[in-house]
Length: 244
Image (cartoon, rainbow, N blue to C red; front, side, top):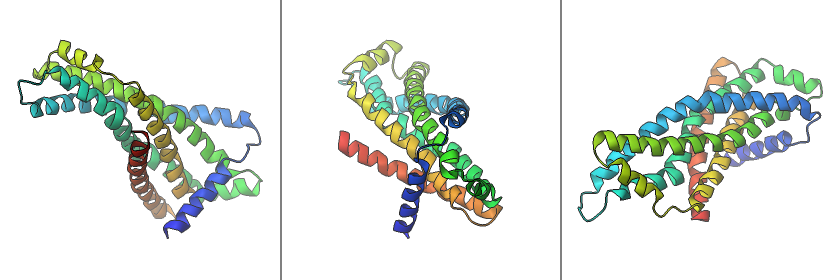
């Protein structure tokens, strides 16, 4: 069963990445998808990341009970945790729930109402026209959203530490600046790029191959989110194992 769906997924990707008939048609769709994926998800990412950063600061402070450990370590741990793991992975899981279900439902509805069949009858590469703009928008906008998420989480940690009294702003900023390794940002961007690909292609596959009616479209959306989240976590492990 797994190999059947995986082969189906690879064949769909082969159709998606065929050379487009006219790039001019795709440009407008890419911009619209970038707006839907990026701008449409920005407020959600900002709110979640800010609170995650604030909570992380208080939890790290709770764990550091030794007087021998300087409080500036809180900022350092928060920074590295958000760059390497929380920023990319939590953002991707949130986006899979929001964007992934939307993509699956949109394409699935087109399939059951025979709009995709009409495109194919007219000789249009339906997979490329419907999915490729979403993929390009995803691999561009998800890294941007991850950068925003990391920044908001670090700022949220600063605010949370200051309000709770867990760490002073000066010590927190000192910890953020101390021992920074730029390679961690590259790891985060590689994760974000791959997550953007998964967030757009897995739901698109489930929607493109749905059969039935409205009930099956809803079930396909649920399956897409579940499979997508598992794929994100598996890819997170693979990238971490290879790069760190």
